Image 1: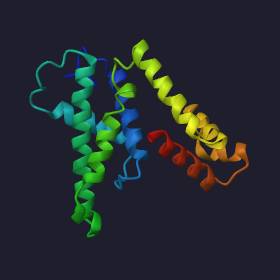
Image 2 (image 1 turned 30 degrees about the vertical axis):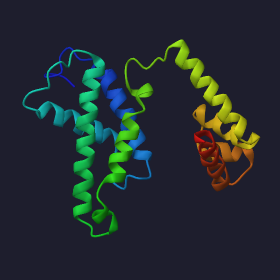
Image 3 (image 1 turned 120 degrees about the vertical axis):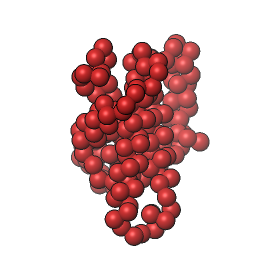
Length: 181
């Protein structure tokens, strides 16, 4: 990102756009096939082609919020193009799943926004919620959730636990349901 993006922290913006693209790519609600790097580059191209940038893009958070909107619109366009080529139930149902996935990944603001660090009160509240959620889980569910929080893949966890992959994913998603109760 250069030229029209002079003065922007393009490396950090690209990293965060890539992070969101990766989250979108993993979301089962999105049936569009795309490469996360291509999506980030296409987002940059579309943003640069904008005649006039919105007013007030003077902070990293505001720049990121605008670029996330551009990225979301690009994903919706790609989704519609792909669905236009197919005739199936998803096409008639609209793009609600895609919009929900875009919203969910945008709401992962703790990961994407610059001011992601929660204050001490919020950290304590999160810890308390996490502890309560962990109390409702079985030991196996807690093990899987901890491993996922450490960044391990389901296959790695399954191998370590000596369990089939489908059981490990079932444990993980069951634990998430308990956490949401």
